[in-house]
Amino acid sequence: MQEYISELKKKVKSVKKSKHALLIYVLAIFISSIWTIFTPCVSYLAIPILAVYIPSRFFGENKIKKLVIAGLLGTLLITSTATLYHSNYFYTQEMTQVDSPNNILTEGGVDRIYENTEEPFNFTVRVDVDRLGDNYTLHLNISHELWTADGAEVIEESYNMSSVGDGLYYKEIELEERRYFHRFAVNYTEDGISVWEETDQAYGPMTLPFQHTLISIFVQRTPVPILVFLFIMSILWWKEKIKEGRKKSTEGLDEKEKDLEDYCPECGELFEGANVCPECGYRREKIEESNRTTCVNCGKSISKDQKNCPYCGEDVID
Image (cartoon, rainbow, N blue to C red):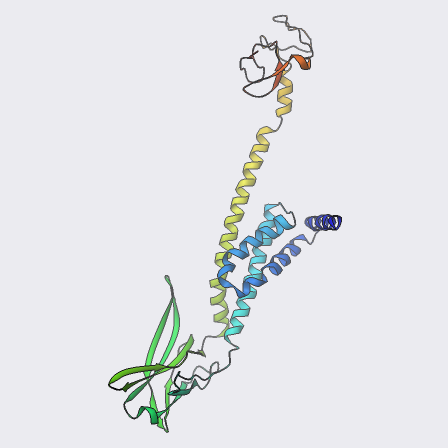
């Protein structure tokens, strides 16, 4: 089993060498993020995290450019799919009728939800006049969301309804292009007390064109995940730059240390290929392990016979 898992990991990691690697990353991000379509609140963080994690950790991709391209395309693909799903949801709702808890109001609804918006919408509800008598008023409450800089604000307007006889009331209204909800309310007097009874809220009418809804939802759902993703990628890019800087700063260090061995540890004169210093006569010999010590300052291995470390100049302590 372990061998199978190990072999599977190797195959997954080898994807980054494929010419279709970018496409595979995008599809993997999309598949792993599908669940966020149904949880919009979590998607703002979940999508960008998956867009980074899937290519870099799961497939082992370490090229920043590929990670950015795959992450952006994957994020756009999943947010576009979510936009299409939620937009379609708003235009597939069935027309329903609503009643109040005590059935004083029944069969409340609107004549259509999605059809021609150039003609007025007709809202109707039936009232139990036998229970209310004549002392009551009937209201139609229509609400919609208004988006401002501070977020969504619910705007509700109330209209008095007119009777057409036999307990049936109606109200004809021309509506602007918005997504509306409606409910009905009756105010009556019982035992000298003013009482309000309302129906449940019903969906509709939906007067916004489909393309407007698409754009609106896309604008709401896409920028935040992309900005979070770019923020995460900027941190990874910064860490990569630091790593590259450290690598460059240590390049050639072994050669430099090797060069230091060509200088006399006593006077600093160049040996010039000889084993005896031409300046002070110091004889260069192979340092036996028993005669080695470690510089307390730079940690390099040096001879105990040296007064100063040839690498950093620190005094040698016996």
